[in-house]
Amino acid sequence: MIVNKITDLIGETPLLRIKMKNNKWQVYLKLEKFNPGGSMKDRMAYNMIEMAEKEGKLKPGGTIIESSSGNTAIGLAIASAIKGYKFIAVVDHHASKEKIDMIKAYGGQIVIVGDGYKDNEVAVVEREKTAAKMSKEIPNSFFPNQADNYNNRGAYIDTLAKELLDELGKIDSFYGAIGTGGSVCGTAMGLKKRNSNTIINAIEPDGSIIFGGPGKPYFQSGTGNPKDAPIPQIIDYSLIDNNFYATDKEAFNTCRFFAKKYGLLIGGSAGGVLYKALEDINKKANEGKTVILLCDGGEKYLNNVFNDEWMEKNNLIDKKIEKVISSWIEEA
Ligand SMILES: Cc1ncc(COP(=O)(O)O)c(C=O)c1O
Image 1 (tube, helix red, strand yellow):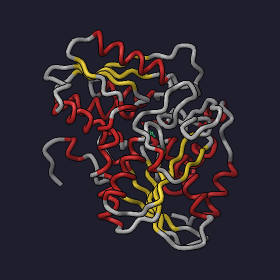
Image 2 (cartoon, protein in one colour):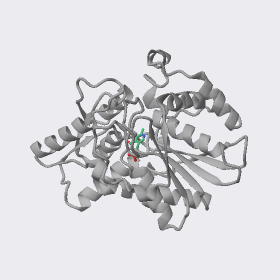
Image 3 (cartoon, protein in one colour):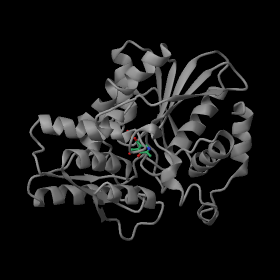
Image 4 (tube, protein in one colour):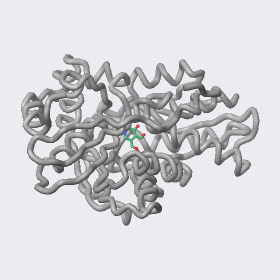
């Protein structure tokens, strides 16, 4: 394959098939780690920039400033590098060291907020306020504001949804993590646009409040919405049929299982989605075809999810989870 710029490699990510033990469901994992920046967020980052250029919100020599847990910022840093913009990421300590180092490697600057927050608390409100304030102070700057930017959701309608239908034909159900809601709602819109009656399932961390609940801290990064943050404007609840909550233990022990048994390194939120999806599919008696969207790779979480000391320190190891997954799926 020959391409002219790195962003031409965004999308058309592969599907890995998993075989269930207890029924005949066909399960496909959409591996978004194969995007250039290692996550599905490359899709929306590039689209938000292209649309801002078209709408005249972003001018040559400008500065892009965004609040992010890391993946959106990596996508924006790549787009900024090839388009010649300056890029500033406003992050908190939910952004892993690996993500921060990647943003810097692509030439982005980092502003860290959230002093006083614990390791499992996410400072979304402070991040967004800081990015908005900086975009008012810095001349010729643009704050994409992914939580309320419809070009985030729009990025998936004619890419991800189309890719899935082109490859698989009929899709009975779809599972994905929900944070801003861009990927799940955009994919759902794209599937509906193409007359697919797919059941849409959204997974958030146990402690996130997108589908209600009192809220509590969680370690899963990039996904969910903490109790003090407003619900992202681009979430359209009418597009989502079912919701699930993944605990940190379920999410992270699933990641560790798939690395050791399948040679597949996935990120923390992807682990949560995968666990809840397989648990749900395992209960089904009939046949069907499902897609599980895995947002990013485990390379960005080597210092936490895949670090034994960190997992033990935070009381997150649970060997039972690996046994349960083994009872649901065939070996690789
Ligand atoms: C690792 C990870 N999981 C899940 C999500 C949630 O995706 P969305 O914002 O499309 O709902 C994100 C978004 O940044 C992410 O980085």
